[in-house]
Every structure is written in C-alpha cells, then in structure tokens.
Image (tube, rainbow, N blue to C red; front, side):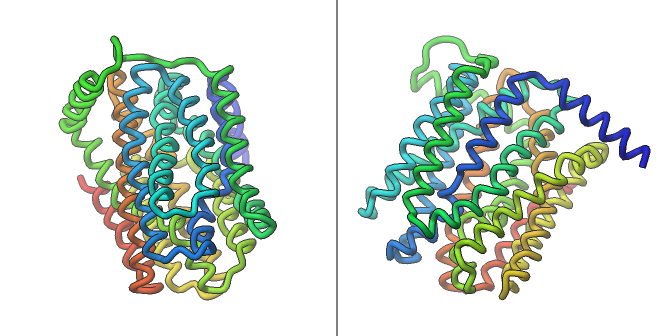
Length: 396
C-alpha cells in the first residue's frame, strides 16, 4: 500500500513538473477527441447513403492515401516553419474539409475530398510529437506521451457514445460537432503553443523539400532499431486499424445498434483513461522491446476475437483484450521511437512514423472488401498481422 502511494506521489510530481505547453496540447487533444464523432461512424454513414461495400473500401483507401502523404508534409513543415504553425494549419484545414464530406454524394468528389481530409488530419501527428519531444527531457517522455494519450482517450471515452445518439437524431450533427472542436483546438494552439525547434533553414521549395527528406531518409535507413520499429508498426497497424475502419459495419451486421457501438468504442477510451498512466509507470521500468512485443500480440489477439463476437458481451470481451494491448504498446512505442530520432531530423523521423501508420491504414482499408468476401473470418486473418508485428519487434 505504501509503495502504491509513493508511486502515485512520484507520478504527481513528475506530471506537475512538465512544461505548460504540454498541458495546452493535452487540453486541445481532449477537446478535439471529445468531438471526434465522424471517423468511427464514417463507414456506417456511407453504407446508410447506399454506397456499395467496394465503394466504401475505395473511400477508406482514399483516406489512407491522404494519411500517407500527410506526414510527408507534416514532418517537413514541423522542421521548417515550426511545430505550432504546422499544427494550426492541420487543424484548420482538416476541420473545414470534414464538413464538406457530409454534403458530397458524387463518388469521385468524395474520393478526392476524402484523400484531402486524410492528408490534412495526418499533417498534425509529426509536429505534435516533435513538440512534445522538444519540450520534455527523455526520462519524462513516457509520462508525457501517456498524458497526451490520456487526453485523447478521455475524450474518446465519451465522444463515440455521444456520437451514437447524435447520429440517430441527425448525421449532420456529428460532422458539425467534430469540426467545431477541431477549430477550438486550433485557437488554443495558435495563442498558447510555442513554435518549437526549426532545423531547416532557407525558403521552402520543391527541391528543398526533396533534399531535406532525402537526407532524413538516408539517416533513418542506417538506423536499424528505427527501421525494425517501423516494420513492426506497419504490421501491427493493419490489425489496429480494423477497429476504426470495419468494426462499425461488422457490429451493425451482428445486430448492434449505433448507440451500443458508440458505447463499445467509448469503453476503449474509458479503460485507457483509467489505467494507462499508472500502468506505464510500471511498464517503463521494463525493456521497451519486450513491452512492445507483448502489446502488439494482444492487439492481434483482440482483433481476432471479434470473429467470435455474436452479442454485445462478446464484443466487449474482444475490445478489452485489444485495449490492454493498446495500453501496453502505444505510449511506450511513442517514447521509444522519440529516443531513436536525432534532433536535426526529429520532425521528419516522426513523419516517417506517421507515414508508416498511414500505410498500415491504407492496407487495412482493404479489410472492408475482404470482409465482404470472407465474412467474419477476415478478423482472424487481420489478427495475424498484429502477432507478426510482435515477432518483428521482439527480434534480437
């Protein structure tokens, strides 16, 4: 008991010692994720608008293509124009393009705007991670990234549940709410965040962008630990992304109402919110590769368990296993990869990490089509990718 109290005191002191801009990022992410209504319901929204499964898969692939290109811009801009400016640019453009997705019925235009929206959303990740790394010393980064994720999941615990009820009243409400909270975060970022490091000098041009990316990729290619981490993330991400691209459709096919699905997604955020920060205080004492191996494996197993879910209880059981894997792996992975990034290339290293996540999302979008072909068995196959990621990161 005394040990637990002592650990809690140490955690409280460490959190209070973090720089003020960290808490601005945390508050902004909470607001943004509280209103992140659209993405968990987007596949279902398109299905309700009578798009075919192959067309929905195409839109998800367009989002994934945008996700892949977003970190290219975000990583470069984070190093060139500053972290804050890039964050604000991402938030304003993503909030605006999101509103357009509601009104478009033409499939070609939907693909184009979906790709642009995916691009603008994923510009955000590299500068946010780079700014946290700029501000926080290495020994406190696990806690800082866990706190950042706490904000994400505290919002996500309530957001999807609220979105489920809003969706039943009028689907446009989830688009409006999502955009407004994104704009609110942009305002906070503009007025209260510092610029962060700028490690690229001179005016931006296509030749400058290419040259700076070439040097960063060349450096990363010599970094064996970082390369292995990216490969493991790519594989695990295919399992992870199914929860956000396919689960709404699968749950509806199994008879779950949108409100029940929203509560299920909220459960994921609630569990993380309650136990992730205390858990990482213990986990960070262990070797990061061992922790990541265990977490990636549980994500894969949880993904596979959805194939067996017939009732809400079955969905809850699979989600609990998946969420435990997420708690174990993701904050440790963010801190571990930040330690592998040289200061001069920090934004672009996080851009490479974001591109890897985006590529996994792009590949995972095919799961919508494969589910249409294979049925629930696709969940088992998707889970294998998470276990493969565990094997890659665990190699000596």
